[in-house]
Length: 87
Image (cartoon, rainbow, N blue to C red; front, top):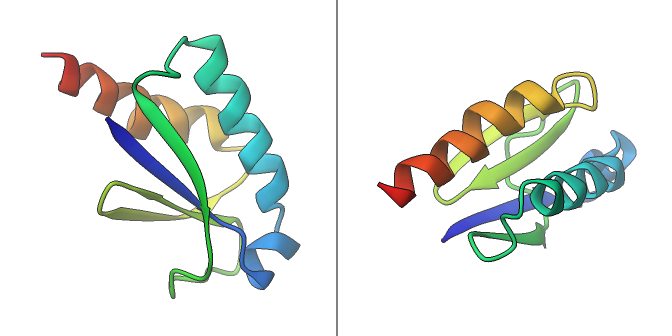
């Protein structure tokens, strides 16, 4: 099970965390990952970046997630992790 926490603290909120939440929800549904990925909100992870939202996947924090780089982020960090867990 992959635990994905999206920062919804004030800084990330202003940088579009709600849109990242919606993109993650849609992608998880589109790839039928509801039984393998848990999405949750989180307050500040202490890794604020000038651009984008912080997202923690299990123990790894990724910064700078934006709608523009979302697809690459999702494929690299979530789809690959799910595939690895299936093996």
